[in-house]
Image (cartoon, rainbow, N blue to C red; front, side, top):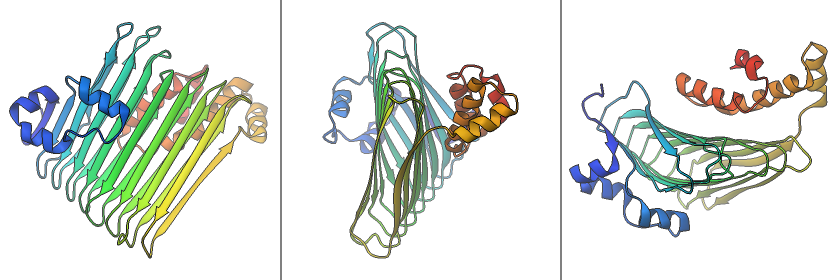
Amino acid sequence: ALPTGAQVGTLADALARDADLVQQAFGSEADGNSPAALNVALAEDGAFVHLARGVALENPVHVVFVASGEGAAVFPRNVYIAEAGAHGRVVEHYVGRDGNVTLTNTVSRVQVAADANLSHVRLQQEAPQAFHLADIHVEQAGKSYFASHSISLGARIARHDIATRFDGERAESLLNGVYFANGQRHVDHHTLIGHAQPNCVSNEHYRGILADRGRGVFRGRILVSPGADGTDAIQRNDSLLLSKLARTDSRPELEIYAEDVRCTHGATVGQLSEDSLFYLMARGLDETHARNVLIYAFVLEGLARIESEPVRQRASKAVRALMPGADILEELA
């Protein structure tokens, strides 16, 4: 049972119950983003989670979105609100039926009040022929904490945009992502962290695995506004290429207009270590298993940042399902 002060349900029910609360979280603007504007026009429902002041959820809220019919297009519109001192975790899980071409265009708005703590996980496992677009805007008050974990494993084309903004001092955010693209799949991540207040901390880590003709794109922007002194920001994108035709494009950006800040950014691109492969094969593993062990170890560094053990295990299992002979990898989970 949910604790007193916690509301979990559909956006339609929330609008009928308290339209003002939903509207102040969402507003009516599409932020100049075409997919978001399309969502505004076509959305009918979505998820709604509201944690009142001081409420703490013991277990994650798990929301499942299923795109099943051939040619189906769905436009979920979600609102997550954590009031002052509240603590909670939300998991969005996107799945689809293999063989069906579908479109998912989801928009979420998140508000994290002072001293609140909210973790948001997106596990995207849609069909290989699907198209997936996601847009998330986050507003954080002083001394709040927000974590985003984006695990993108499916869809023909997938794009995830996230923008976070610090509206109070001493807030902290974590943007963490793991993505996998094989075949001719394409995965985009676009991030924006707005340091508008002093003494805020942001950590951004995205890890991509590109195989066959898969392509990954990362564009991350950190904007430090005038007066946001004491900003501490880290941004990093690491990519592992498993074939000569795989491609990654990484564009980390820093835009700084304040004094006394510590901001770093960087990107790495690499391949599996031949020495590590030789070491594992010399100890009895065949080449396929040896490669998968190294790939999985690369992924685990990103998955390890997920705070919830059950959620982390679910994400790890989803990654292992993509690898042949994954039984040996369970010991590393």
